[in-house]
Image 1: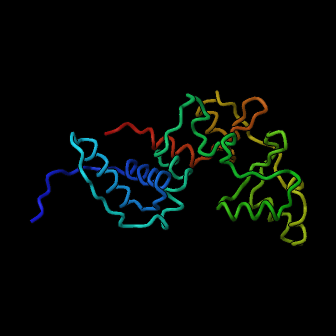
Image 2: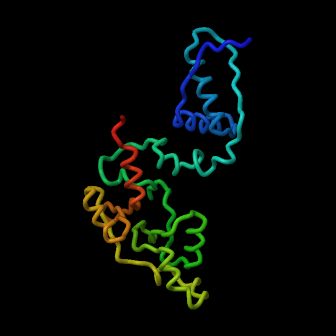
Image 3: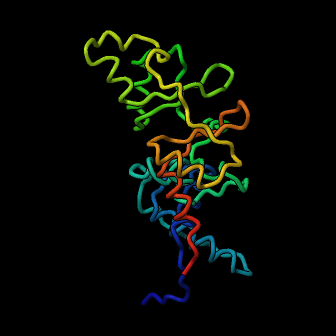
Length: 217
């Protein structure tokens, strides 16, 4: 008869980060249950004072977790990847331009290119960024639709002919009230440090930030 002598409580963050590390180090593509078991096995090993042979299982695959725990954006939005805080509005940016996390389009790209990037990334709007890294416009599905609904050949037109150039920009030093004022106007906030584009802040980003910083009960 088997005897259980130890038990460990593994939360989602430890499970997910463990299985991602398992893939990075060992090439084993496991799922969340694998992460839980391996994390518990590692905890057990760290408590031992004498060498032991420890066996763990890999009961599931990571195939169904590609858009979640194997997605850096999802992990950051859920608070499982901890970025160094800046103490300003840039902490609310879930996808940061300088880190290559923002899907953008150029002013001379075609509307078809922009539409395909929206579909591939499951987003409804794209910042328009020039070659110098400056955000000069915003393009959403409505802008594209207005341009092409009478003549689909306009999908070949450049983005700059349809984008919105009247942007709502905020400095990282702006406050939450400034951000809410932008939202009240039905817009998204483009965070700029002088001429440097940092990223977008949406209502969803603000809600995610507030949820992650709720006082613990």
